[in-house]
Length: 240
Image 1 (tube, rainbow, N blue to C red):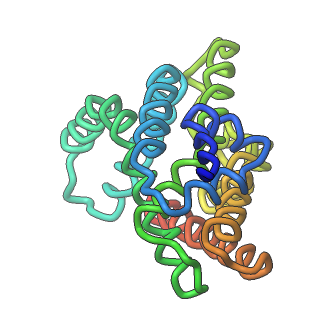
Image 2: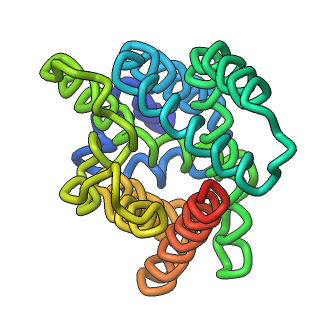
Image 3: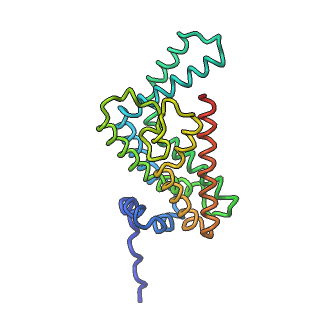
């Protein structure tokens, strides 16, 4: 008697649906695979969403660049106004490029961080499965991008946008971005609902794909969030 044929493995489309309803199942069934397909699908979707919302993000990035250049000039009085303007102009030209390549670079860094944090905690993950975890855990960022695009459609004056906090789903949204302390804004931004959602998915992945006890998976995911927070605070301190 022939053994029954194995059931067909759900495809990538089913994975993207299940990541909202049954994320543990997605991470468990993809645990032994590399995450190339999911990685590129999410990276392309994120890049497209970010680019479509450039009318929102460009003024924010330009304001952040201007602030950073002003801080650099304050530390280096020899820097001329012409050099500052040249730096701002160059950054403005490169902004669309940053929006496109930023998504895959961010996914790679998150995957690397998932792997680096998970290993000491005993996660049974490979570098490839870490990239898979990063990709599926970042699916909520696509939702976040759509929300930013919708806010762009409802915004009349883009010149008032100077900080990511203004379009976030975090407590930082309720502060005056023009006058609030940059470090405080950066910290509160880490409590953005989308960021918390991503962190929860990483914890689910550690437990299901990494075969970690739930408590340890929660701690490991929290460490990933904490490392991201420290980088955000460091960037805010550097920019002044």
